[in-house]
Image (cartoon, rainbow, N blue to C red; front, side, top):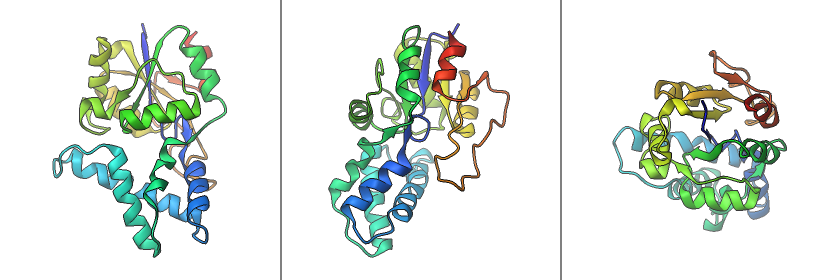
Length: 223
């Protein structure tokens, strides 16, 4: 019944925290790189919320990330080069992701359904060797998750009904929104996405269609 799988990317497929921290340490020596990366990421949802709420027209995430970089740098009392923004295109995949995606692609269409732009997701896929069939998500919907339009635009792009699509994410909130839009759901925990003291999304909070320990396990369950 499931013909296509769409995936959250930041946190679910790639380790944004560790990768961005590494880039900050390289370009801003003397700054607490982990704290900077965490603060930069903390600007992510508020920036998108203004667009979701209609207070601002659609702006690609690349540009929001750059605005947020300057906001964060100002708070830390430093000047960050614009080139640091490309850190989001060089995020390391979790070890199970590439083999798991490769296995799932044998039988299903696979694509990101991320808030990242097409350009960002394409460059990230090349860096992390993510074997997507196509790039879906926020930019084709001109809006941001968890708005229903983002999930439904991905379905429409593949000419599939929502019930033939499965959203895969490490974030319960993402899955609640996808389910409300009619998609099937799979939860894969990433208990260190936010570091060793993570307190959210450690376990499923609903009866998702599949709960898998990692992408390899998910591929086996879908087989």
